[in-house]
Amino acid sequence: MLKYLSIKNLILIQNIEIFFQNGLCILTGETGAGKSMILDSLSLITGERTKSSIKPEKGKKTIVTAQIDISNFPDIKKDLNKLDIAVEDDLIIKRTVSDDGKSKSFINDYLVSLSTLKQATNGVIEIHSQFSEQGLLDSSTHINTLDDYGVKKEDLIQLKNLWEQVKKIKEEYELFSKEIESLAEIKETNENDLKEINILNPLPHEFEDLEKKRKLLKNYIKISESINNVTENFLGENTNGIENLITENIKILNGIHDLLDNEAKEQIKSLESISLEISEISRYFSNILEPGVQESSLEGIEHRVSEFKRIARKHKVDENELYKFPEIIESKLSSSEQFDVKLSNIKNKLNTINNEYFLQSKLISDIRNKKSKLLDESINSEFLDLKLENAQFQTFIEKSESSSTGQDKVTFKIKTNPKADMEEIKKISSGGELCRIALAIKVTADKNKLSTLFFDEVDSGIGGAVSTAVGERLKRLGENRQVCVITHSPQVASLANNHFKVIKNQFETKLIELDYNERTTEIARMLSAKEITKEAMDAAKKLLEQSKEIS
Image 1 (cartoon, one colour):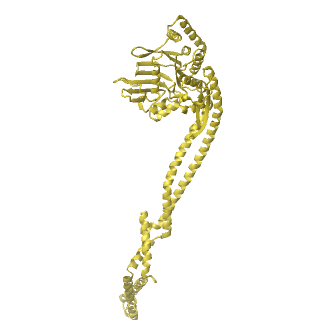
Image 2 (cartoon, rainbow, N blue to C red; image 1 turned 90 degrees about the horizontal axis):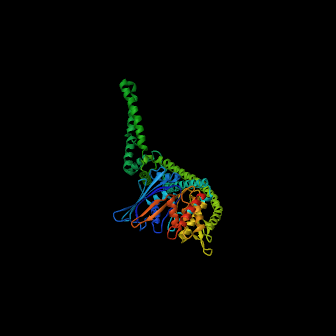
């Protein structure tokens, strides 16, 4: 509820302070006294854009300050706390407008944007007037009005929670899908790399062996000639080969073995050992050139060595370690498959939550369609007592994109002429009619809400019994919430819990709170044509007495 409002330097208002209370608050005053300026100040507080007419004198600043109790609006407290704005039960909202037309907004001394200001007051203060863009003129609020009338709060909370889960999992799925899209290219690269390495089929120590063969083959002719010479020197077809000469020497020495001393015999053994080593060395060099190895095989080895080096360089590994790389790539491909499995699991989870959301959405949609007919009947019956007997109200429900409120778009439409077509409420021209339509809807659908309601000229074009009917409904609304009304109707004014009068003198607009006697005089003025007569005073007292009975 609105507890306090301060207005400084707003057109003709120099300084006004209003302390509001619960129930029905009435503001009266002669035409042109400045009542609309109070509504202008409330529009500033609720985040509306600054009108061109609201511009202080040079060197001055318009300042509107409000204290609002939001103890019954936990969601707003939660939203503001998320913005790091410290909030308890009261909001102190301030809006300033400098002489160049620029404005600033503050919540509890924190500088905020207009959108944040709107968010903080949305559903807390509603203004219903011909030119207001709030309340029922904003068709986006119609679905909330219908839900307040006929849908269980726990069903709506469940729907909202499901929608939040859908959004969260969908966001996770989309992020993961993008990640997998980038991984898909990596996966394809890995598959190609694995195919490439498998074609090469590197073996342990193969590269080292290839390098040796390559070196050998590159110098095949020179090496082969030298090796042949060495082999010839070792074996030789004549008796001059090293092996033959040593063998011959051993044979000669063994012929005189028994004639020699022990040292000589030891030397013969050493020579025999040397002979064995030379035989091994001879066989090695004899076999170093494999049988059938030709210089033409160098091209194949060069190609394979080149492939080893290219693939090793590509993956930044040592050529001798390349045989291990297929296992590494297969491990990466296995990880990619795990990503696919995880994405599939997320998708299944999303489908499950989506189905739950759609079922809950359909359940609520069915309830809305059923309750909308009852709402239409109730509001149309209210119109009869509010001198809107030619008006017809109807709720239209269309399919819309999924959201936290389901898949319905709710629009209230009306016609005030039986021959006219149904139109959106905001297209109705008469300000008084708009306020009475809003009143009928509020009394019917929003009677349990706790927002503060402001009505401007709800009594326009009516009088007598109809004014009394309007007043009674306003009084009824004020039983569990704050209702503020700018009125010219004495019947409505007589039902006030608090009554303020707006007065305009030559220099400025002021506001005073009226006691019982002052209220009697003010209501008498409203009943009189020009001068306040005794009859008017008696009638005013009678209205005030009757209001006690209604209370």
